[in-house]
Image (cartoon, rainbow, N blue to C red; front, side, top):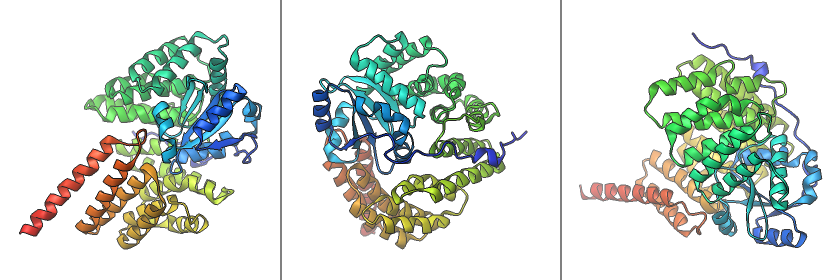
Length: 452
């Protein structure tokens, strides 16, 4: 029997109003990790590091909500704050020291030796972010800490070094010891799932997630959606259909992590968090074959995002919603309806690559291939770092849809060259190998056709 959905009105509530930009009083340094560390050493303060990217909607959401909240003001002078765009080459060295699990990833580090004192991946509520900062301060000052706080810190250090086995073991110890009301507990569940995912221990990840979905949702934060993502993804990577079905049913249940979190009046969710929760809920309905529930959930997600976009205070803030809107509009079969908003964004931000990239993707979905190619070329001229390779990959896919093998080969060659030019810390060897393989196969096919 189809599970009843929450009312659209309940699903679409937008959550707490965003704080005014700059209300936190934080003086952010940008793309200057060494300078931030030097300033922190001189002041004997730890460094808060925000690893972000302009294409990351959750990164932008955090910047315009939690990181701008006036309640962070008491912490402004207790740290040196630095935001590192992970696509910029000048930040590659920092990425070799501070691994990135997903976007955004936040660290508190001591400036003398880069010792990791706290780590948080993904969205955070204000309370979770404050707990993260307090954990970082405790580690830096070497003050008395709880046993679970120390275990969590050790896991964070293992994760920074991409030792996922060590991270999981330490985080499990912290989870076993911590009280259920510890502000970092839900995020700790997500961290353990992320470690299992990174280590490709997919069945363990699926089983752990199923057992701890309630724990991840206990504090009604973005952790409910993050835990759902890892749990369902890991299950899908296996072949246990019974387990997959069980997890999907648990996710869409009325008391499951997503619906229960969305229904709570005290849920600490940004618009971006709500959108992610609705998207994951919709995906599980779709895979269970309940297309009506999936569509109604998609409509609720669209309403959340459209409302937020209409209230955006700046053109840059409006870009927060480009990707989730493009995805849900496409699911609903109306990708072209987003074109005016993307064109307005391009006009307002002529030097930015992100609006044109999303517009190229939309034009590809609508079959307007020449327009898609034009937008992809516009975005490519403005993109940099690893993201430039992603834009070139999109150009290759557009050329493939246009049946232009020469154009596709040129895009793939550019993509390979971009990957090869990336410095250590940014280079993705797997993506480079895949691009080279695609280029080799296409070149052979073109040669075969020429010989006929």
